[in-house]
Amino acid sequence: MSLVNHILRRAISQTTARNSAAASSSADTAQKGGGGRKLFMMLSLFVAFPAVGLCMVNAYLQPDDHERPEFVPYEHMRIRTKRFPWGEGTKSLFHNPRTNALPTGYED
Image (cartoon, rainbow, N blue to C red; front, side, top):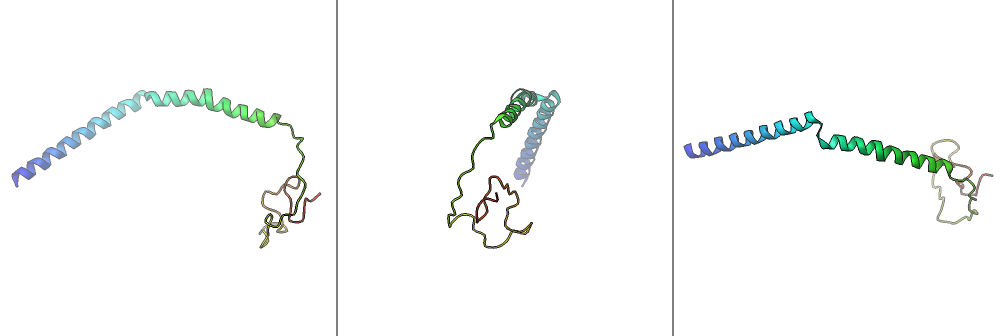
């Protein structure tokens, strides 16, 4: 019984020592800021924000001269088995009358 007791105490003390050493090293890294925080900040400033800005400029400068396709009343498209719970019930929630057709065709 004394041998089992000795083995368990030794295992617990080694685990506690390892955990405390790992905690102190992670606390030191967190105190110093580590390399990950600085890298993340630099990537945000020099990659993410300019990429978002370029995407915004690209979307703003795109020409809006595309023609809408001719309406073809296919049987498998725009099936309405029940009305939508908003408005008059035929238009989807984000309906755009210029680009989205109703089951009978475009509005204008």
